[in-house]
Amino acid sequence: QPITILTARSVVGIVLMTPWMIRNKFSFPNNHLSIHLIRSLAFLFGGLALLSALDTLPLTIVIMITYTSPIFVCVGAVFLFKERMSILHLVSLIMSMVGVNVLFAGEKVFDFIGITLALVATVMLTIAQLSLKWLSLNEDKVGIFVTQLLFTLLPFALLQFVFGKQIEL
Image (cartoon, rainbow, N blue to C red; front, side, top):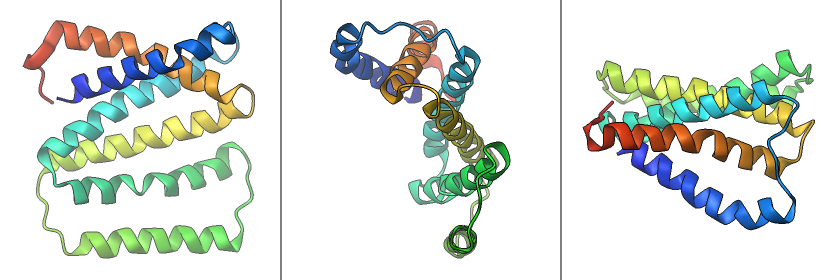
């Protein structure tokens, strides 16, 4: 059950991070709240899509699709952060795409919903990683993680409480 897994992950993360939060007098960041929200929503929908895709597709297919996320993160960083792409980066991106295509070539997958969910997860992972990069330029990295846990715990817990075992994506 995707919601149960993601809720448990958030609860365990918050429990483990509570001593850090107390020691550092953690409070929600006043700046860049919208970016934190975007990252948290991307994690929320990406996590649900990823775990739901695993219900309908083999693990190997889901992993092959989501392994394209670093490619999109690299390309997005060029446009959003004006990072320079060296020839080594370009060769790595091309090799990654070729590798995914070679691995995917022998697969016969006709599960439209599963592939769509895996692609949604990939896009959401890309958005989460790009927003993390932006936030890490301006804020404490542990605080970024804790904020995301706190932002996603309530929606996961509410979904778990309202739908329980009834929800299936």
